[in-house]
Image (cartoon, rainbow, N blue to C red; front, side):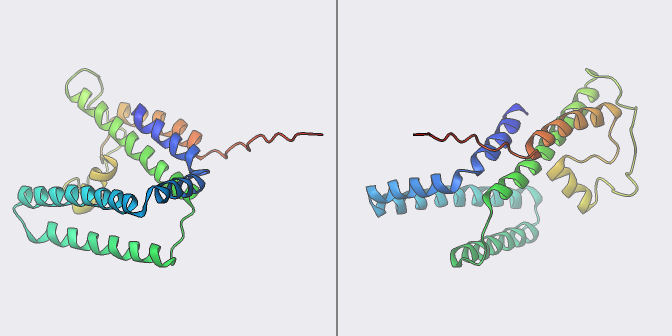
Length: 195
């Protein structure tokens, strides 16, 4: 939890200076030689490709349904190729500050869900009380075994019938961290030398 929170605030503080830093690092890499840059990019992409291949292979093996995981992987790869091409062509421009703010906010929501899931596990183990004290139950509206219930559970650790304690910990983490993340940045102090 602390690591995710730290990462989110690091992303926020870094987003303002990221473009200049990336250009500087790129210039340094090109000074070494274009071969070093190509090798680094090849190894980074190759590593990610290997991780993706292993993930897809394990998903296919785990489900015993080769078609759906493969279709999902192919659609994801086609989307990634299309986005990469659009970025390369300059059709899409990303405001890195906004990108890191929104992805940071998403990470905070995911981390809050992980915290709530941990509270639920501690309640199931009878370490924390209140497992049967439900805040609400919308299991009829969002069945946990439905495709959208599974999607919400997988991404946000959403539970349609959380206990009061789970919801309290979720809110007590989410509210202050999102507030700190989304508050306007303070203007940087500028010093001017007078002659």
